[in-house]
Structures are given as C-alpha cells and as structure tokens.
Length: 153
Image 1 (cartoon, rainbow, N blue to C red):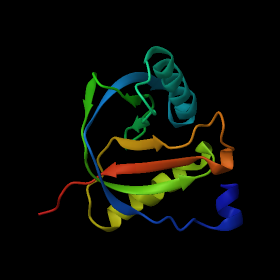
Image 2: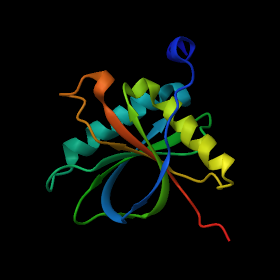
Image 3: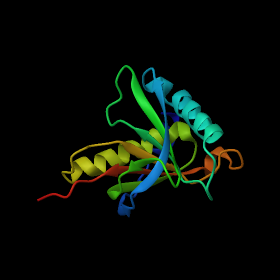
Image 4: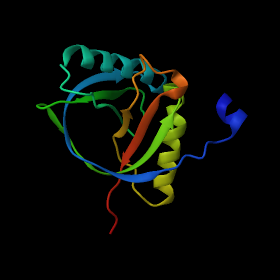
C-alpha cells in the first residue's frame, strides 16, 4: 500500500507466452488464509529442495489458486525427470521485479488484463522464481507471474 501511495499503481506490461508441459516434483502446504501465503510457500519450497535432488539448473514454481479462501493449498514444484505432469499451454505473463511481499500488485495487473480481454480466470496462478533469494537483493528478485489462458471461440 505504501508503494502504491508513493508511486501510484504500477504499469505492468502483460504478454502472452507459451510454456511447455513439464514433469515436476510437488510439495503441498496448507495456508491459513492470504496472510499465511508467504509462510506456506517458504515451507513448501524448503521441503521440496531438501527432499528432491536437483537435475541441472532448477526450474522452481509456486502454484496458487485464483480465489484465496479461509484455508487453501499452496504447491511448490520443481522440474525433474520423473514426477507429476504440469500442463503447458498459453499464459498471460508479467514479470515482477522486487520483493515477494509486493507480488500481489503484479498478480492483480495480470488478473485485470485477463478480465479486460474476456479471458476466464482459471488457475493455478504460477509464480516462476527466476532469482535465488539467497544471493539476490529483495529489490532485484525476478518472478514471472502466469495465468493460464483458454482459447476463445
């Protein structure tokens, strides 16, 4: 809120991208409402990285429902050679640069873009973590937010 009040709503460019299907290892964590998303996501990612051997550079993603209920499931996924399928397809995508605490601003921009163009909102919302938070300053973290698009008739 402080950032929006100081700088106004960010103009977030949204693009359409095609993502391949991937095979992933998945860890699930229950979030006790929207205020618990950061804790649940961190816990899921920590368990995933502790229990899944890396097979090259990591492709790490958070998966979140469109509607955040009183409790909901947060999933963390890591690309592996054998695991669960994660569908590919066409996505609305925006790049967030900055702290994870401000990702919701970029998510709202992508959701608004989809609504303005008549795309049904369906999930899960994907957060593809490009930067390693262990070695990247919070203001420089790069995350791609993606919402699946359906082809319209």
